[in-house]
Amino acid sequence: MPKLKTHSGTKKKVRLSKTGKVLVRRSGGHKFLEKKRANRKRKYSGLQELSGKIVKTIKKRLAA
Image 1 (spheres, rainbow, N blue to C red):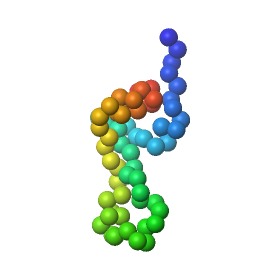
Image 2 (image 1 turned 30 degrees about the vertical axis):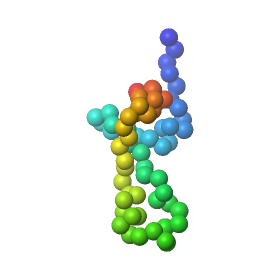
Image 3 (image 1 turned 180 degrees about the horizontal axis):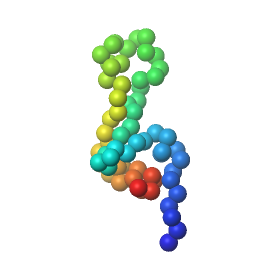
Image 4 (image 1 turned 90 degrees about the horizontal axis):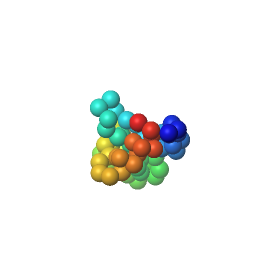
């Protein structure tokens, strides 16, 4: 069976941690920042862990 290719769009948006968790950047933190409160903008920083069925799909796309 041939090797699976990595999905190039997914590898730009998603990161796998060393323990196998799927991490993504939170959405909404790059536009219209003037009208958003400071504590709301701080929540956009950092990474968010994904859960559920989407994790299995993403790991398959990353061929991990």
